[in-house]
Length: 195
Image 1 (tube, rainbow, N blue to C red):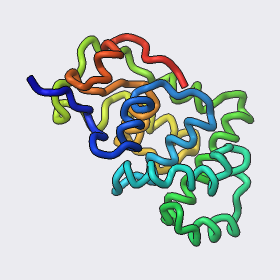
Image 2: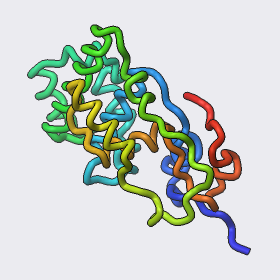
Image 3: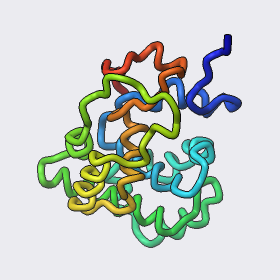
């Protein structure tokens, strides 16, 4: 009999903890959701473990991802961030995070929230879990719709694949595989809690 293995994260305590306690668990609140969208953008083309290791530095560099604070970042802040070796120094991704914070502030000015926008795209839970990673989609009609809605509200760097990764990270979907130990504690189709 084989020991159940995590979908991902075995072999690194930080990655394993993220897998066990965060991935697929609902995330609410505009600050938390802005952080997840930003980190998914920074992860593009890189390992998620690289981003996880730098997450504390990202939180410091981006004022805890407070939308109002990040929206106020200017040219000097971009220069500061590009010189900060503790984060991923990519001008387009840094600028996208600032642009997206400004989009959150614009939502607030219109009496809306990022939380409402993102969670309006939560699909109905699947009755059964995926069996293999090759079964898990890179994007879905729901992530296409979410990306389109975000872009319509001024967000950037949020294509359908990034949107689906954010849906997974923020618990709109729970893509832990059927034989993953976490799946035994979160039956398919059941609420997974909140954070």
